[in-house]
Image (cartoon, rainbow, N blue to C red):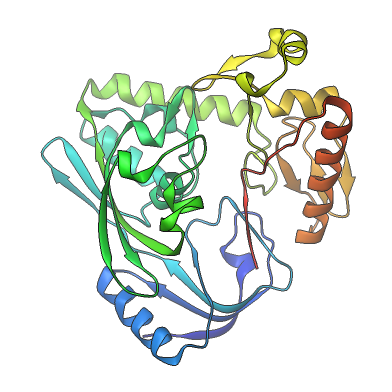
Length: 311
């Protein structure tokens, strides 16, 4: 068990932002995870937080005064038409496996960063697809009681960029494995569809600077007043239900290129806040508050973050 101290978390963040963790350890299996949790729980000292791909987490400049468990539980097993996947496996590795084995159903995730655990936790989605569309069941381990659970799709309580693991009773659980249902398809067709999604992202997203992807959730059309529904009629899109893209509202409010310190609201895709010059978490949070205030004042709407905070 290689328990480290004062590990700089910016090195494990896609954003290149974040202070040190008091304690830090990597786990590569469920058994390793159990050993770590038994030790921590017996000492009853450290708070615990989980880090995966670091693609959707804004880490505090002060770091984390507790134990960070880095999820390195990887691997893909074929079980008939299903895949049982280690939760720390990257979406990219899963898509490569799908191409090699002519498995269809995840093409929408082409270019999606992060791990399958993160995708499940936040019900990641794009191009009218969502993670929940493929999930059969999710295996998890309680951080305090070490209880092992297996939830089916309905029990995961998936919602828009949400699940039981993000805002429910699964919040204090470590996702260990995910079972996905896929179907056999044409290999070249699968490969081409994934490539199209990657190309779309590369062309429209600010890939030249570190970011956490979309900062805010899009806004459900149904949640808007009739007046705003009419005002935004021309920018509504389906993803996977009618939404108003937050990036469009940020652009309409003149927030493209708005900068605080080393952080900037992207002029290419305003829902991305990019790290252009050694930004701090404080810089990013300031821009988030500016954007929320301006949208609130202009449209009487409350933006909700898609990213999560650590520390």
